[in-house]
Amino acid sequence: MNSETDIASHQLAQGPEFLSLISQPTKAALFASVSDCWNRGQGFTLATLNLDHIVKMREMPDFRSAYISHSHVVADGNPIVYLSRLAGRPIELIPGSDLIAPLAKLAAQHGVPVALLGATQYTLDRAADQLENDNPGLSVVAKIAPPYGLDTNGPEVATYFETIQSSGARLCFLALGAPKQEILAARGAQIVPSCGFVSIGAGLDFIAGSQTRAPSWVRKLSLEWVWRMANNPRRLAGRYARCLAILPKLFFQALRVRLAR
Image (cartoon, rainbow, N blue to C red; front, side, top):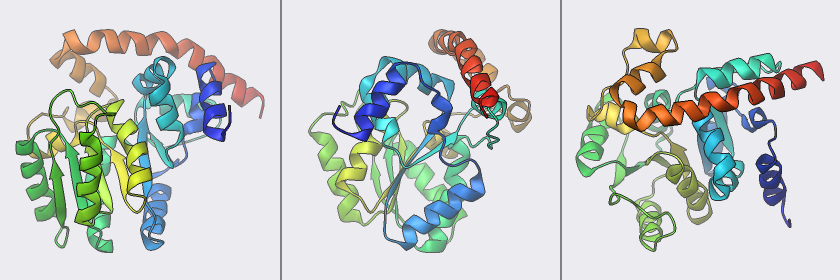
């Protein structure tokens, strides 16, 4: 252990209080911090914590280390919100897909060029057109669609970051899914330190219409996970079962934090 990141990664591996990863409790705080980064010419990395990420962090050291290095982490998932409130740390629900529109609007206001990395070329083209139409003045300067099965340690990744750097982008939406997008965000922050990297999962597919998101009334009832599983049970049933399995331990972690206050 020769760095703070190594120490934090070791602590997470031992079953720590994962809720401490949340660094931006509200949308207002997040957007103010992002604006400040752009005003100072600095980049950032933004991840959206949910139960699936916690499961993956326990199993994947690279993912865990990448997550710890992120400058900005918000709560994506009502279980994270409820657990944090139980711990005495009230926070807002901020799903990754809900961040694209306001961040694109903020980028247009600041004159910040945007890059898109992930999904398919069709999705990127449709999403870029939609974002620029919705946000006058916004410029999508790079659209990179990696091949299926992208290796985050592969040589082509360096080429992607070179493209982002040469494009002048200062905001990059990563639509690759966890853990690839968060690992690439951490790497991108080192290669293109002036760019903000935001992991958004299937967010660009929703904008482009390539995938259909749960209706707003389903999301308001906190049942988006049910919608997703009903539409893809073979892929998601096991994932959600693993998420449910870790809830008791997280509940008692949150309760201990509250009692210790």
